[in-house]
Length: 282
Image (cartoon, rainbow, N blue to C red; front, side, top):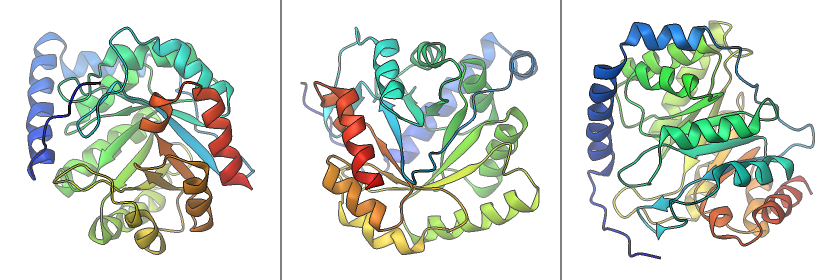
């Protein structure tokens, strides 16, 4: 595996600028109106169905991590991988689509969505800054998107959520600290007041990575667990490696874990999914 590039404290600002540039380039090829017409002509996306057993997994396709370097090569069989994930019990599949630091693409999302069919939704994981990218996600087959709360202003977040609700996509709101979680709580109240929860549910997740180094801070997930909203599914993100990790997180009140690196590095990803699910449901 190649050595990762150091990340500075402006990581999110850098990724937001890169994301804006991708929107500008994409818009030259397809207008907002045309793209939205394509999305609205599609059948409803697959729904996120959580298990009555009380704990679920969002299994991730991620070819590269800025902190860890290359996880898989460009020849990775995305369709085969997501099929293994969902057959092992994953509730949803997260697909990195950011190209410059994660080797992702919208094509990976398209491949994953086709392979999944209606068995489980694919979620676009990227540094989304404009509703155009939510529409892109739906056209590529997504049933959900990730929104990073601290990366863009509240009005931009609202625009992303409005588009996701219009297209029937679930949203994972990603938080890093208590301030982010306070904002998530406010968003949830507005979302539920608008009676959108059933068609476009919101999940709230805590990312345990330090934004300066992108190294995992394992204790963050447990330290912030008590601050998570209780009226939405609660997701542990980053640094979830073992069954023991999952057991601790489930006991702390998390209802899902998003797992990427541990699955991408595993020689038997389906067995790993089953192992983690069993730990969370015990």
